[in-house]
Image (tube, rainbow, N blue to C red; front, side, top):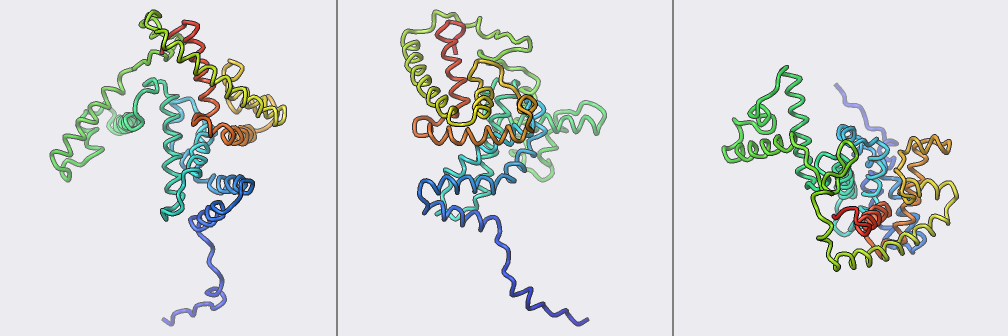
Length: 319
């Protein structure tokens, strides 16, 4: 059989650039750009890598249901991780940006899922919470396959093959799975965590007398700093449209009300959930760009921290 001749026109046609190459070119421009151009390039890099955020967010959808979060919420958190990855990316290391950004996006999404899960009060390390979730998922799969409750040995065998693994590795896996199963069956409350009835049982465990004057002085000092930061954020919101400012005020919980989901805000303002998410992302970028030199916390974290300090000073509970 005579091989087909290569088409000279096709060979002469330049190959399309890979995403890695395009990212590198954008970061090279960013390194040389002035302040105004840098803002535009950062937004361009973020938009170009948004499909990566969506892909990684979809991988965590199975956990989102347990945390009362939607895909839009996961994408929003992933965008925060993406912006952090852009700021921390070092072009001189010759590392693909997708690899670097993927780590930051997963960290932010998983941390938010762990905080919202309510199972362990947001105090458990992310790696431990992920192990518990994985063990619980494998246990459910085995239960569906076997038609009965699987034994601990059968669950361990899903993670490591006893024929291939050494005794030491198998014992370690068995110990980790046993600990994860024990924690998965418990419900651990943090002292500032609400139970199913919306009450805070941990508050009654700590007498208010243990609040020292030093603690109160530190709290008041931090409260003054937070008030100053939030005043800056409010002034920034006024530079945006009335609708965008209202959306951000509601999504941040600045009026001490329950934070509404994206869908309900979309119905209220007659736009899609995606449009609400885009507005929130745009305003958050503006806020973070202004307050980043003064704090590493996001606007939502500042609002939550201020609320906790106010509760402390009112004597409602100690944290």
